[in-house]
Length: 174
Image (tube, rainbow, N blue to C red):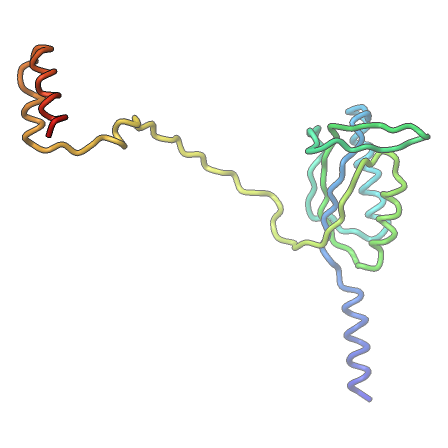
């Protein structure tokens, strides 16, 4: 009987454990810049009401979408090629996720969102160090190797056009 109690207690603690999630969202581009901050506050308040503990976030920025998103509102189709994109990383219990999804689907200012499980590790990418590319002429890379005897002939005094033609004929015939 003690084994059954232990497994039940383990299940309860697993259910109460916090899971790390990341919410990525596109807000409608028709929202005025000043109102995007209000929308972010509303999104975060929905998460807080469900017991979310915030880890990291990025404020929404205007971005061009990879493809046009069509949304029907009031019997009219609206096409969007850009949106405000932002994200929030947070911890909360898994039991409240379905309620959050319902709330965000009902929000008319959210064009699209994605909610994924993730890890708590650092979200921000480290700064990249850009190295200056060295410019090497293409001739340097494709320069043929010449024999010493040919080099001596090239370094000799300039030859006339007639002598050059004769030399070419000798090389072609061989």
